[in-house]
Image (cartoon, rainbow, N blue to C red; front, top):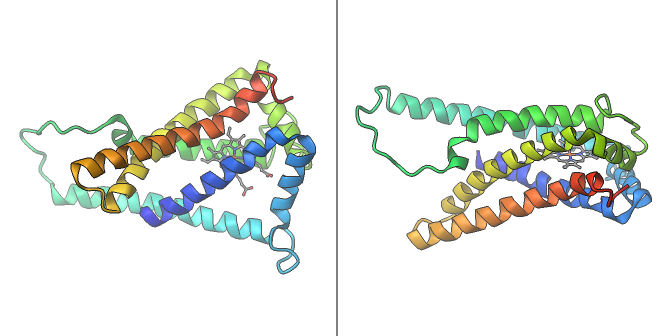
Amino acid sequence: MAVTGIILVLFLILHMLGNLKIFTGETSFDHYAHWLREIGTPLLPSTWYLWIQRTVLTVAVVAHIVSATVLAVRARAARPVAYAHRRKIHVNYAARTMRWGGVIILLFVIYHILDLTTGHLNPQGDPANPYGNVVQDFAADRWYVTLFYTLAIVTLGFHLRHGAFSAFRSLGQQTPKGERRARAAALVFAVALCVGYLVVPFAVLTGLVA
Ligand code: HEM
């Protein structure tokens, strides 16, 4: 869970930073998107790096889901008979929604790729003009797209908050003070990532990026 989670989080941080380049203007953003296809050249042919990254991400997503399933099955096997009296333990919202949160994020990613990578669900869908694709996508009259992205990204935030908290705790923050510190760090990280993603659709929706 942890290794694949770290790979996916690294991608999420880099992708968020890349998206923020939209504030540097159309030419710069489109140039950045073009550069993504040229990473590793001339050592590698054009787009090879991108395909290696796509393969690594796909394997990481599949392994993340398989690990989660194995852990859930193992946990159930360890306690085949349900507790007669279930002790009330404090489990927060983020921890309780990991499974369904994960499913929603996966469905979002499939939609998102059809929207902004292949362009099938995008009003413009021009691979040579990713800036235009983003601007058309989050236009004010398509507010429901921004709403959907917002719900998906907030779900991602909850998922990351619990994932990051578990990771920090595994790294040794197991005293009460350490737990508090891990909880706070996970919250700051999740909020920063959500804000970093959400400013883009909201900047388009409000006309700041046009
Ligand atoms: C509002 C937030 C987001 C915006 C504006 C955005 C924007 C984009 C754009 C423009 C592309 C196409 C890049 C290109 O082909 O040059 C893209 C691809 C992608 N995005 Fe996002 N994205 C957002 C959120 C997310 C989130 C939350 C995830 C993951 C949970 C994600 C995962 C991906 C993936 C996997 C690709 C495909 C990369 C590839 O071509 O291999 N994105 N995104």
